[in-house]
Length: 307
Image (cartoon, rainbow, N blue to C red):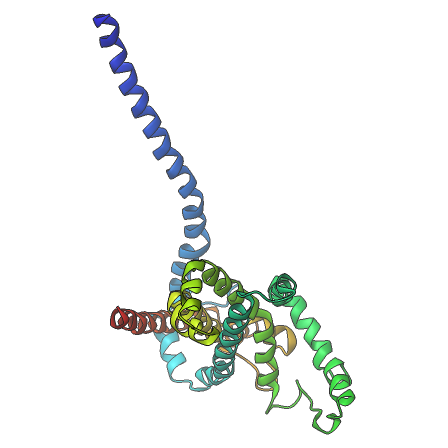
C-alpha cells in the first residue's frame, strides 16, 4: 500500500499543475485576440498618424517629404482651422441635455410604471439605427414642407416654420437635436442598469423612513450611480469634440455646420493634405486626453471629498 501511495502522489501533483497551466493558457488565448485587434486597429494606426503628421504627403504617391513640425506650425497659425470648435459648443450643451433626459427617464422607469418595458424599447430604439439612416431620416424630417413643418402647421405654429437646415442661425441647433435623439438611448440603458443594481432593501428602508421619490433620487440613486454619470459625461465631452456622421450626412459641413473632424476629413481627401490632416487628428487626440485627465482629477477629488 505504501508503494501505491508513493506512486500516486507525483501523478496527482502533475495533474494539478497541468490543469492550472491549461487555465492560464486559456486566459492568455482569450486575451490574445482582443489585444491583437487593439494593436492592429488602434495603436498601429495612431503611431502611423504621428508619422504622417511629420511629413508632407498627398495620400496617394509613395514619396513623402519629411518636414518635421511644419504641419503643426501651419495648424496653429491658421485660426480658421480652430474656429470650427465653436460648433462643438452646440453638441457640448446638447450632451448635458441628453444626459439629463436619460437620467430622468431611467429614474422614472426604475419604479413601477405602466408600460415600462414599452417605453424602455422606445427610448433605446434610436441608438440601434445606423447613423447614416438617422441622417437621411432627419433630412426628410427637416426639409421644407417636411414632417416637422406639417406638425407645426397642424399645431397652429406655422408662423414659426424655419429653414431648419438652411438658416445659418439655427442649423446647429437642429443637428444637435438629432444627436440628442440618437444617443440618449445609450445613456438611458447605462443609467438604468446602474439603478437596477441598487438593492431594493434600501428603497424599502427609505420608504419606511418617509422618503419620497425625489429624496430617494437625491440621497440613494444619484450617489450610487455617480461613477456611471461621470463616465457618461466623459464620453459626451469626447463625442462633442469628435462629431462627424450626423452633420456630414445631413449637410456635408455646409452653412456653418462643419466640425473639426469634418474639416480634417476634407483636408485629407479634398485638399489632399494628409500630413496636415494627421496633425489635426493628433491635436484633437491630445485635447481629448487632456480633458479626460482634467475631468478625472475633478471627479476623483469629488469622490474623495464625499468619502
